[in-house]
Length: 157
Image 1 (cartoon, rainbow, N blue to C red):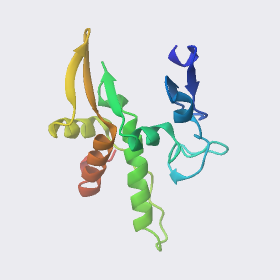
Image 2: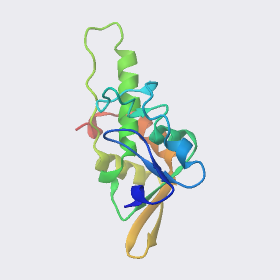
Image 3: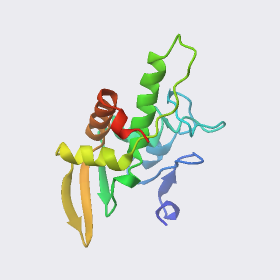
Image 4: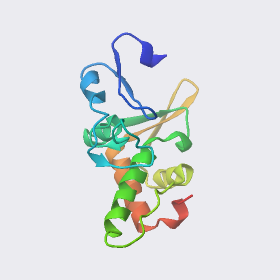
């Protein structure tokens, strides 16, 4: 397994740990236990915010990283969880002063993937027999978040 190879570092999170290897890998996964940033329904103490400001997922977003989907469809797109966390944050901000806390939104990754495809965002190619998609994480997350904020109903499960 990749995470057990020499030189691989892994973040400290019970449900969404991330493994990285190469230059800057240790720093990339460090600090996943910190509390700052977007909350989610996966957050548990003593672990930090699953998709918080110090999570590897958010760091990939901030750094302008790219996502390679190698032989998989959008059902496996973990970055939709970052969209969910950001959208939930916006819902919670809008609901301040009311008695009701909004529920964490579960988004349909396949429908969002179809929307993303319609924007022309991903580049398509093949690695061996595997169909692949390559795209910028920030563009993906920002585009999906804007669509969900504009038109949430079709994407909520």
